[in-house]
Image (cartoon, rainbow, N blue to C red; front, side, top):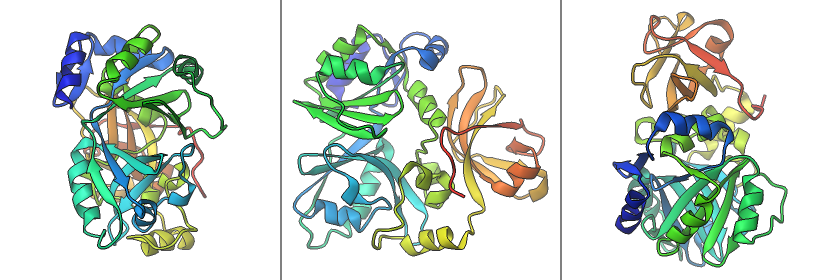
Length: 346
């Protein structure tokens, strides 16, 4: 987290630990407000990589699961970066400003992602830069938040696409989901942006934004789940993060074979778990039909406004159809399967 920005947030009564805003006084109240009020949070736990240079988009096209040709100054998208075995190393959000492409992903994956991608730059005219401390990310969610942003930032929404971007002066406005936006702005401009929206939005901890990602069915790969899943297992194909019409990229053959041969046995589900125990990313799940073998894993987890936790979990589809799913063991808390906001491909 940028130290200047951290000091500013402290002055706004933020409680910060390990570069994450835990809360602004009462996380339970903040979670309840997140359901139906306009809220605002710092997103410094998400890092930023800038790709610049004449070959930036061609380079990314050869490395990522999404079709970079569909990204421009207005169109943004989700995507994944895979190993040659098709296993996800990172999931991210991509957008373009001027000729540069920006990738947002967990801050703790930025260094390793830059290091791995840099191995394949070779003679391409592309530069990879960690700009996490130069640009501040502010998330805003709530009823009609897109209209609010347009009024306060004096921007126009020129597209009906749910996921898109707009740029005004120093600030980029990213529409990441229904009634959710991110404001990306230089650190020197961030306090003014925060104070402008603070009149309308309640500051909340980052776990509230994590909960919104879970409700939106947007997976966020963490170090604990790297190389654990194929893109389709975390529903990247359902949110536009996988193209089956583009050329080669690492893992493309396996990803395509899984798609066309219909051999996908596991999918990501939205679940609710009632427990007071601490649930962690990567935790194993069990069902009676799998005996002692795990039938799935937790992808993302956040406290629920209704008590317990809400989570995204990759689970054996046959187990979901026939059995109860439990956390950690067959004797552990049972998962309640809930509806995702999108339809899974057949």
